[in-house]
Image (tube, rainbow, N blue to C red; front, side, top):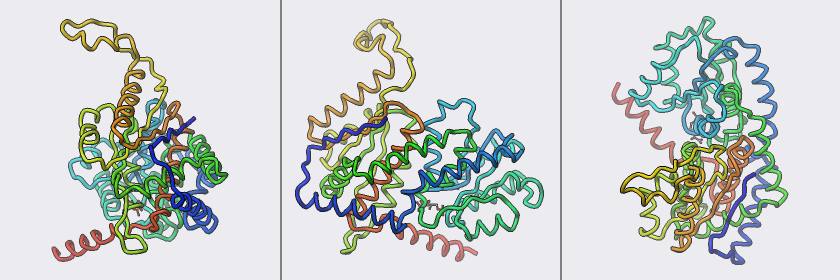
Length: 420
Ligand code: PA5
């Protein structure tokens, strides 16, 4: 179960009310007209889960591998990585997932040295099929692991991409297994498409339950049973000039990659030029409690009053590790937590920080998971995707494109051409 505590100290006026109604209608339109395809993934991807299970059972290389190597970047890796990090501790027998994302030579070489080709399968994931980081890393794998594209090694390679893309044609040419991505599902909204579902299912995660949790959120939202989403979106859209940053303060180390996914989802979706030519967009920041209470929090409390904070809290870590009831000479000051669980400590820290920020007048809200499980994670993903679409609609921008990042890509090509 996921609950939402939305007490931002803000009351929606008539204008915000109209904006909420329009944004809701706009999402209904986007869904009906297929402007964005992610709304339907929780149901349509169930077929992918079934197909992947069948494929994994019948293909020796996949069935017997220990490691699933994902080659992808941005929306093609962050979602699966976030789910993997959140669930890993519950799946001691899952195949390992190794993400090759960054063309950092030191990191890449270290990771390449960890791969045993005979025990791995390689998922090359790129919606466009031509992302230079992904394709360069794929080439490095082929060359340094001695992958024979004409021989049986190709059984170990799966391409996940748009139908007809350059990567699709490459895979088809070599007779490799492919999964496609619907044209209207953008990278950062694609975690519940083949992009996330294939690696997570092969690794052994219960992706059926992940999709169920997500489907429940979509159904309830369009049945007008999750209206808190509209209010939160309206708050962000109406106040982003004042509260220019939204800090996702997530309490739990296993939420770190989720905060990165959130930053990408918001950053690429909401930082845009609106229909009147204005530059708009709230800045997403990801922080982890309680460690970042000892770093970033000071800035929130006493720095410029330009941030809102969303706490993500997991009530039950399903872990009973305790702070031992030990007295250490001179350090008795810390004994007040003796005998309590670390679960109690981290959550009390979350509550205390939230209360202190609220007392300071910082707008705060919470997303509370009763525990980490597949269904709750599915709901959380949809919660953020729907929120992003609503804010985008209220800001009068195209949430689903990213023209800003294309400019740098063009300059990169020019630089390499000049250096030839
Ligand atoms: O969300 C997006 O569209 C981007 O972040 C892409 O996912 C990223 O640029 C990778 O693109 P591709 O999947 O085409 O390799």
